[in-house]
Image (tube, rainbow, N blue to C red):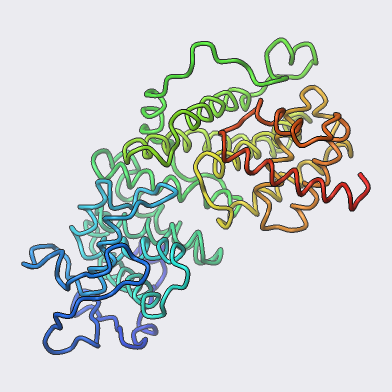
Length: 459
């Protein structure tokens, strides 16, 4: 009853009749069937536009019916895509990790996995077809039906399969659903994990991927809806970081060395250590690009990112509490927010359409507005200010008013510090946190926008 109260009454019956594909209810364990294939199965191969493997024979994956899940022809296609195509940015729910076997070990996990993958894949196709869109939704509804049927059994309710399904649905809810819907999913996930005994009970194999997915949901929910983190740190982050060898002769970022800060009478802050860690990851990206690493490498890199992102999120939350000094509430809060969105986008590769970017970029913008008009608080390290403003401008591209404000502030700062040529701007930016070609492209495009802004606004 506790879990049902936390998750709410997820009623899928109103969605049962949708074109040619219908959801089969509890009597058949919430499975999907294609009504267009009643009677004998056709042996006609299916053509998938734009997909490398254009001919897929029905029942090619499980011809002898040995899997723990039932597949129709469309499921076969989805599953084949899941196994063959990399998921980027990296996510524990992918067909190259331990999740690949887990996905077909249980009907509930299968439906939740196909819904998660389908929602991801639909953004990689130029014009998703209506029947494919409905197939994705039917996987969601089947998963909800099975979750509801398992909540009455304490053992089934806290199984790996149920936790995985709720975590997967929560992950997508954070991307597309309203606050009430996302909040309901998070409460349910928290209740299930608590009844299980906490994240520490998920300690091996695919359970470690459950830890990663739950922790990522926790972070994004906290960022988007400005709530406290719910779950404790997980060991895999520190284990991954332990495999990362920083250069022996790593240098401080410009203006942020101990000597420079002491001379400027600027108090040190924990975020400076994290900027050093990000600097190391930027160098790693230049020598070993994330897109060119294998599955294990992407997973470890993701763990390292999350270790930094969580600590930055805690700093941002702590520095807004009453009684914090002026430095913590302004400069270091702004730096922490910038480092957070930089890690999300520049290093991890999260696309700017993700809903946490508008939220975090507006928070950064509002923090800067509490400072002096010329942002003289950053006078001790001008390059730090340029990095904050340029990163803010890049990640706020989907919030027009905020984006234009960042561009104006950055243009004024460049003029104030004598950076009136694009080459000068790029050279200075490349000496701070810089991942190489991708950042050069971003910064070049930003400079062109700044030039237009300066001409039009007379800066």
